[in-house]
Image (cartoon, rainbow, N blue to C red; front, side, top):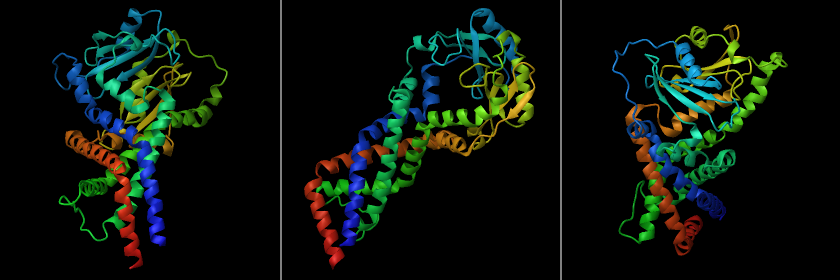
Length: 383
């Protein structure tokens, strides 16, 4: 009888955690499917035509692009620069202020090899939402920012509990059946139950990985906030009280890039944040560099360069929880192994949708079926 009570407890957890999160998980699976191929879809829907140049053409000087941006918008402040390592482009971000909620933040797109201005984009708030941008916002936070992230993180925790409880229940259910059995000649609900269990157990590891990494991703805002008020604050305390440097007094951005590259040889700098940016330091260029292998390309290291002198201040060691967050992102979207892995992730995503829908169907027809199921378990336990 203790076995039956234990099974009923696990079944209660499996049923209610699944039911609470199912609609959210269906939405995440449906929006996650195009996000797996987000780069390809964005490139197809919003193509940029670059000048045909030899592959070994060196990158242009960043200072020349910065000068063009400042000449075009002399009354605005530079916020950050993104150096793309997939396409030959550099994005320079500017706004009237460096407040994180400035509605006039916009970008200028340059050819990374020639330094020519390719596109002057309107402020982000005035741009029409792209398909992938819409899918990402819905998938990440339901358009609710931090409250949406935390809600979806909670749904992810329930999903993980649902998977674990399903794994526990699979053993007793399959006690007298061969693995993979689908009783297609029996009642429709039995066929759907067998299919639900088979697909669920076959993809259990993938579901756990995607569910757990999804929870980590939803915690990115509070985790980075924790890092800023602890490690970053302690590192910058010695500069407390010093005035933020005027952008006219800043040293060369190109030299800051070279300084970071010398400090981290073999790594690629992809982002340069200006002093005063809410996501950076008041007194430094903050440069983010990543490795060049499939694994290290997902691990970023921040470098602080004194914005006035151009001298290296520190290569910042990332805490373990942020390293875990960085590793969770490629595992969640399957974007670290090229097209074959993306196709595999998409297949698993489709299977997950079937598991969720079949679970809802089984709950609808649950009463009579589960009475029979628990009677069978009880009979086996007392035999």
